[in-house]
Image: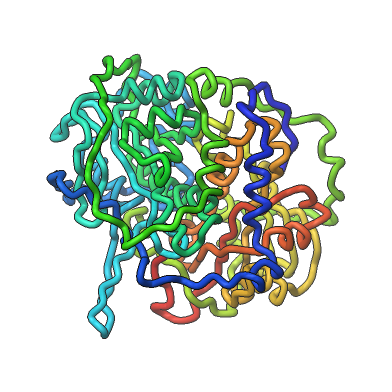
Length: 542
């Protein structure tokens, strides 16, 4: 990662999230000492179900986008750039309104958070596959819609139910002004006709992953956002991720249980020039009944403590958190060993015109890789499209990034096996170490054959100390989210190229040690393995 100096003010230092990260690191010793087993009698249901709210079915009839998936993944669509549109970035004319229709909103929800297919097993059990990858296929992230009046949809606050592809209204009226105030008038929020909120119900993931779930909150939100950004770009709809907001205000608006649920990120969707939402109506506390997730729940205080320590209390804190310009510190590169060799990657035009709709419906998590090598051109294209830049309030420009991209290459045609660092600016690889490392790849991926068999493992690492210095505790959320969005884009790019991909967990400190000295001081945020599925039908969703 580049070293940065920032004019931003971290609301607190990073002690709390540094401690959380270290306590939830995977190591061989910790796993050997761990006697945890899954209690299937209390496995939670994968949905948040409101008991008494009537469904508002969403339309399913829309025209598929003609924009190729490989363009949409990188937000290369008419009027859209990685910076967004209007006051928060370049793009189409800032005077042209872009308001999603209900059908386009429904499509975005389906392609990012919906059920895209199901399978029926010999036993009669049905499995429902979601649009985006999720740790353990536990689907703990819910999407809420806050909008002004749209054609065929009244202004209100809604919950999206993937189980029946419907909205349920939690509050009537236009409450966007509450979101504007909570973000300190973030420009993309001010002009957005629709704001999506991504929130986790911790227990739905912690049942299996316990305290490490707080990492997964951002991993699983990030893969959903990768899909959402691609779907929006394919329709020419500007979208921007916002992480700086007053947590309590969003929690109250959605009626979330502070002990069990948390709002994680916002997505501003659409653009109305010179728009200022009307004053929000009164928002008394919500007391909406939901179906119990399981017979009992187990609380993990580390999750709640990490979220509380990285929360913002006032709009002024939100403004300060994202204020200022990130600038590279001169001479900062001396902290690492110089690269041994530089490998320019080929510039490749898109190899497929398949739409993002079709790619998402096919996407899964590959369960077994074949040993076949990947063409260098395909790896080059996937890397270039996945790292074009993310429209987000914690990144000043599309070229800004918090995470470095490391590769462990097992089998890529025209590229020696070994380890590399990807240079986004030059679209080239810096050679770190040559050699055959399949065995090491399997170990680093928590001893899984998938990592050993993959053609390439792509790791996102971040220098948390630099991030904490610039962003305080909340910087941890930003780093995890950026890594997961990038990993989600790699997923989509791989499937657009008819490859396979899967996200894997890892031995944290071992990954840093393996890529050192270049990665000294960095922490791994996300891992995506890419290769060719071992056999037809080997890819299933997770």
